[in-house]
Amino acid sequence: MRKLGLIAGGGALPVELAAHCEAAGRPFAVMRLRSFADPVLTRYRGIEVGLGEFGKVFKALKAEGCEVVCFAGTVERPDFAAIMPDLRGVAVIPGLIKAARQGDDALLRRLLLEFEKEGFAIEGAHEVVGEMTLPLGALGAHAPRPQDLPDIERALLVAREIGKLDVGQGAVVCEGLVLAVEAQEGTDAMLRRVADLPLAIRGSAEERRGVLAKAPKPIQETRVDLPTIGVATLQRAARAGLAGIVGEAGRLLVVDREAVIACADDLGLFILGVEPGGPA
Image (cartoon, rainbow, N blue to C red; front, side, top):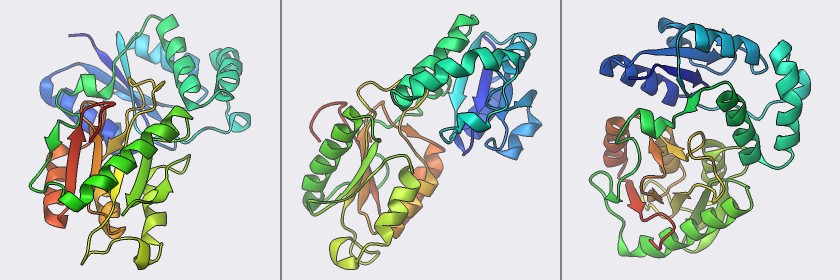
């Protein structure tokens, strides 16, 4: 079993991956990204690194005997001018800046290339933890109602179309009206915007209407940036009055699956997995 180097950003996903490796007996070390990683990750073997400290992280991964790296968690698009790189970072940053001008996915691919050049294999979060992605069909006790199906179709269409433009991964549709699309602000901020819209065009706790769809971009580097939902996503979808969430089976990460299912069941929301690239 190859030792894993977990490059940990913010949120619950890196915490779940570390706990899984610990429980499964897989050797690992955590590279905690400064200002992003959850403090709970300090309980695991590893170090804290800044965004521009490539030499430090490469040295630490090799000293730990890591052969594979996994990038997980949220990291805001950096202000490259504010990054304090180490010597190796000085050589890497210009290439990242150039790639960033072509979009987020180009930036991520260039980042992975730097680690591959150092001899590390890349493993996606869904590969570290099997059964972490959304399955086909309904996940939990609730299924879409007939009136939800047109919104599912349209929300998926919009999410896939904005993905082609490298804009974002998510869209919210209610009774055929596109309420929001996701860009750099992320899913949680998008759902907060929907919750602030007039009740005349969105659902409520008493009358749930509308669907959040999440889909990966066609050019997306799925080893790093698969769409993700967690308990917070369900809670914010509920506050926005939505009826449910839809994603592509095998291409949407469900963080803390049992808690997500329990939350969806309690709130009365459906979670639906559909065939990748196909109709709902």
